[in-house]
Every structure is written in C-alpha cells, then in structure tokens.
Figure (cartoon, helix red, strand yellow):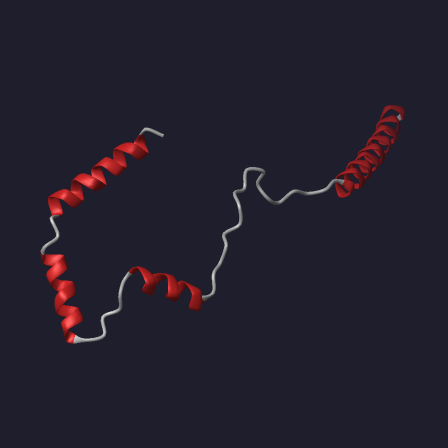
Length: 99
C-alpha cells in the first residue's frame, strides 16, 4: 500500500507542473503579436470612381450613338485581319514567356 500512495503524490505533482507550464506558455503566447498578413503582399489596388472609369473608357472607344456609327464599327471589324491579330498575340505571349 505504501507504493500506491507514493504514486498518487507523483501524479499530483506532475499535474500541477503541467498546469503551471500551460499557464506560462499561455501567457507567453498571448503577449506575442500576430501577423495575419502575408509578408509578400503587393501594393493595394487603386480604385477609381465610376465617372472617371467611364471617361477613360469612352476616351479610348468612341461611343455608338447613331446607326451610321454602328455600321462603321461593324465595317471596321469586318476589315480586321485576324491572322495579323493572332500573330501579334503570339508575339506578345512569347515576349511574356521570356520573363
């Protein structure tokens, strides 16, 4: 019976040591700063107001306001050389692949 009471004492001491160690580790971790953002984050995107975006878009592509504008735009699309356009895209892709 003497051996059993000795084990109970060791168990109590180990339990107290585990609790104290848990408290020490908990206090240490609470004191640490947490960085939730990746270190390699890029620049934040710049948002432009809708009015400015519309001004930029309409400055690049003239609006279609009449039937003649539409017919002219369709004629421009029909006259587009798709082979030349594909060559340009392929050249751009090969230039980008070099990086």
